[in-house]
Amino acid sequence: MQFSSSLLENAVSEFAKLPGIGKKTALRLVLHLLKQETPSVLGFSETILKMRQEIKFCQRCYNVADADICSICANSMRKQDLICVVENIRDVIAIESTQQYNGIYHVLGGVISPLDGIGPNELNIEALVNRVQKENVAEIIFALNPNIQGDTTIYYIQKKLNAVPVKITTIARGIAFGGELEYTDEMTLARSISNRQPIESYMAK
Image (cartoon, rainbow, N blue to C red; front, side):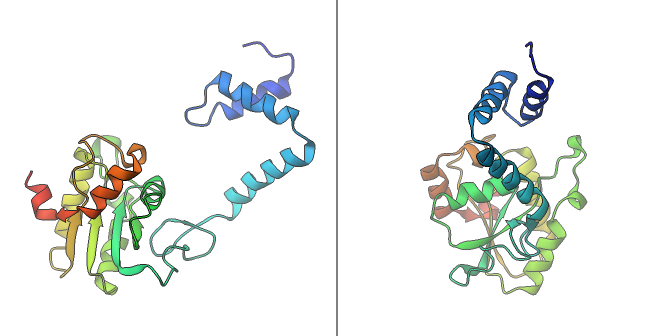
């Protein structure tokens, strides 16, 4: 791809670093911005910069937040004794889009995957255990992707919580093994949460 401007080429290269964005799509986005008025482009760039500099992670659940505690944890209308454990922030967004869950979350920041060099210490597992021990938690729902890494993580955390009197469930297998929550349609995900099952039944399969 030949460019008559190094400034254009550099902008395309930066956009192409984004996941799922190839050179052609990056060029289309850059040319779109080039057609916009300067204030509009400044607003776009300032919003991205402000997001990167000022966004925080909830001190309670590790979801993204504007303050020390995210808006979900701070919402007194939500069930504070019901924790949905997810792999990442995209999964929180996916579940929230179903409008069928009214509890709070705990974002692990990944799953146990020895082949990728990710062990329990790299995840927010101890923080979850501490929450369950200190807070009046009635139920934990595991909403991890149905694959080997997800199941390994569930098994590990379940063992860590053996001595804690808390109900542990997992979303139903309406989601195919090997699938990802992020790409599951809202109806299937909503039904999986509603039809969650005891963890013993899930791990026995």
